[in-house]
Image 1 (tube, rainbow over the protein chains, first blue to last red):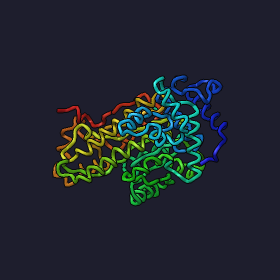
Image 2: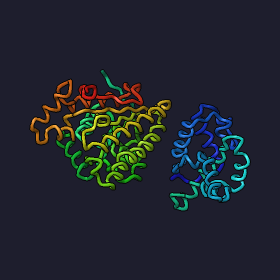
Image 3: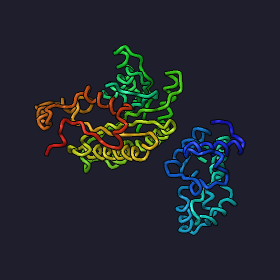
Image 4: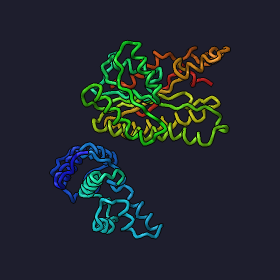
Length: 137
Length: 262
């Protein structure tokens, strides 16, 4: 496990990984860039981002979680269980702040919501969990 | 034909099998660093003994327990660690030859319920998880070649081979899909369906309590004999090589014509 990095370094690395896979300049990618909506990201690209995150940060990567792949499924699950959607999503995506989850729920009908910053938060959370000795967090 | 292999290493699952051992020897001769897996300490000893007898340095051997699903996730990483220790430098995993298979032959109606679950877990679910991890390791280098050793029992099972047949068909499907999904990023796959082979379990079956069994079997094969280990290994070597990358997401049959017959 590598040492936790400052947020700016994580953001730079995440942007570099995405840029390398898509063969574009990292300067075209920002923390508020929508990964799927703004960039021409396909499912195989997401797979490569996951592999790159694992290699760059030495963290276990769960593609379903980091890329919010089953977001809509989880929203439906919460509704089926009559559970508050925000709270339900917080258990599924512990790396996301409550404010971000609210924002996601407000914009989910506009298209895929994943932003570069969401991936950065996943890395930070994984690094903190590793520091705390939690391997399944 | 000169077969090309890039600078990566090979992982051979089921390394203590006759075909696994012979292919490992051929790859090493071609300068490919090899790591083999064994299912037990006993199998590990068999591998080491084989290389001692041949007066060759034994390549790294690691245990692959098909009953331990979690270990499948880390197997490629364990292999590259073992390779690094043995060869003194960091090597990417470029080649995977999969001969791993657990034994359980019985009529499906006579099988123990728990054995059905554990057999499927070991031979299909375990393989799926191992392939997930191996694919991700290969994607890093944007190169990988995976070859699965299947069997004509996948489509032509004898009585008692129902679960073996199911496992082979399902595994072929896993390999085929990886070839479809990841070939654009340099990871290609294929499966080789071997018919009766004079190696491993096949040899045991052919020669066990003979009573003319071998003649009866070979009479059904247009070629008139079983596949030899030399034929199987040279074909696998080609399929693993960079020369064969265009043979992707498919299954090739090598059975002397057995499954083409009524």
